[in-house]
Image 1: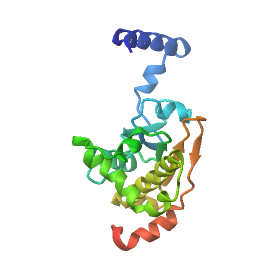
Image 2: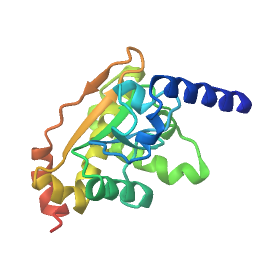
Image 3: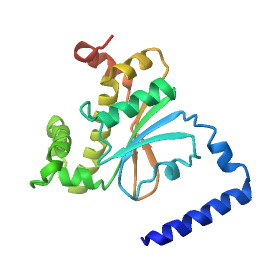
Amino acid sequence: MNIEKIFENNRVWVQNKLSGDKHYFDNLAKGQNPEVLYIGCSDSRVTAEKLMGAKPGEVFVYRNIANMVSSLDFSAMSVIQYAVEQLKVKHIVVVGHYQCGGVHAAMKSKDYGLLNPWFRTIRDVYRHYEAELDIISDDKSKYDRLVELNVKEQCINVLKTSIVQKAYRKKEVKIHGWVWDIHTGRLIDLKINFDDVLNHLMKVYHLD
């Protein structure tokens, strides 16, 4: 994409917004009040606001390769804490997508250098569900299922954090695991029962 074209697109976008509402940017500058924290993949085909039909200020967005939530990723942890404590979001949504390049890359026998630790976490998800995944003979179906399981595990990682545990137990925030089907454009709710997940986690991950 031509860089100059980006600035031209921006000028057109500004004009379009102001022609519909001359106070559009004044209102934006007053602040944000999102009810949803969206944790998704950085894939350029997956734009959070568009696939959710969300307006500016409605969704707080954090994206990285393969929608990972790691306790060692201080960027992710700070986003979650800020969203829960300061913005008071009511929903945390982890969204994966089929044909995820990060998931595919992680399962290749290849040295990715700096990316190795990042992809290792995805490989850990495979190892955890190896028995289920290995009986799936079709590669596409296997990768699709790994995408779903990765979303589930990242939701669990969200729930392991103290700030989310406290808010969840107070019923101040809900957690959701979704997958975006790139072939149809539809969002799929994995319908994970996080009450059961939390009960299972409490023995090891309970944080007062």
